[in-house]
Length: 226
Length: 390
Image (cartoon, rainbow over all chains, first blue to last red; front, side, top):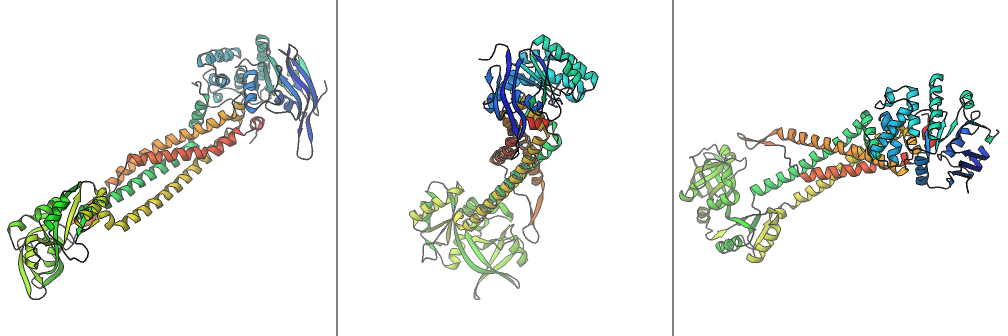
């Protein structure tokens, strides 16, 4: 049985790539993440930190080992089941915002809720609240090409939180931003973490940002070193 | 604003935001549909024109003497029998003989057709092309003849002139021209009673012309006439069977042509959708990360293809209607003889079924063309799609 406050439980997880020559992107990882935790995964390029994040986000599958999200083993789920878990329990923010260019900020934030089948009125109310939370209440009807990089990334954060997920996953989410926008996004994440008590897992190269999280997990050559 | 069916909104916005690419696909579909509808209209117009020209100028059923007989005897009895058959609209008695028509030193060998004017007018509408005089004069003026303008030009005669009808070298009779029919052919009409008397064929005719209410019932009614009268009855369809075989072959060739046009348009649509998959890779990956299932991604591309198809279909129908209208304005001069000419338009017979055929096939082609791009999009790995740098 999973412990009450564990949201992610990873046991002996490995990810191997390659035809013929096997390369271990992740090698026998054990990691538990507590609900509401704000943690950073750091490590040099190619260390396996993004692979770990993608496996936690059920975007990728492990070669061996198990991963439990909120007590559910997601390693052997079907494609549709994984899509449902991603929609209901996970929110993603990537280095680039990947907003749908033909939709307004508000519509972009509503999109995960429509995928989940939430009613339009309810979706609009929540999206409006989230955009206000990230300081974009006056930019809701703007399309991505009418917003700055930092504003787009804030819309992406609001979108990631749309379905009130258990975990928000950020992959180098400030990597494309200047230091001022970076700080602003971090402050927003921190505030939202305190407000909504969701688990925030971010992969970053930015040591200063990592230092400001509750916990740092360091990966080198596919292994957790601290 | 997006609503519950998010796949529809994404698909339609994708199409609208990719105007440049989608425009070519829509034009490809529209042109295919437009060309095919116009072509179908032309082919059925041509077939209708052909049928009209056959059935306008010749009887629907030609009743001839039975085998080993040169003439139909007791024709009044046969005429009553034929008139009593369901579907027969009118009948006309004909006796044809060869003779030479002469004026001064000019002579033209032709067939003289003996008719009962009232019957032949009712059955074949021969007075439609009458430009001078009338056929009924044949009823009361014994030595009279109605000839075509072609023949009149050749003999250099006019209304009221007398021409000589000669059989062999020792028999001839002068006839007064009492009517002129507009035709380039050598036509000559006299009264049935006169030709029977003059050629010694009292009580005989060569054929009975039959006109029907429904021209396509000709084969069945011809068979019934043969059963009832023991004469030979040939329908216009049987008479022109070679032509109908040719029309059937033309139809097959046309369908091959339609399919080829659709295949080309289909590749156009597939190409646009594949380009869209490549361009929208990251967004597709992000949708998957947000929880969109692979089925939803397939649905988005099917909706895009259907939307492109519908827009192409509407545009194609407009192209077809405009094309049909413009083709209808083209006038073609058809010479009838040296003096007269008729003006005709391009034969077009646009039918609702052509629009339905073209539209239905276009939608099928669209769906088929979207299968590969939709599958390709749904098979994308979300991580690879999001991290794709191309």
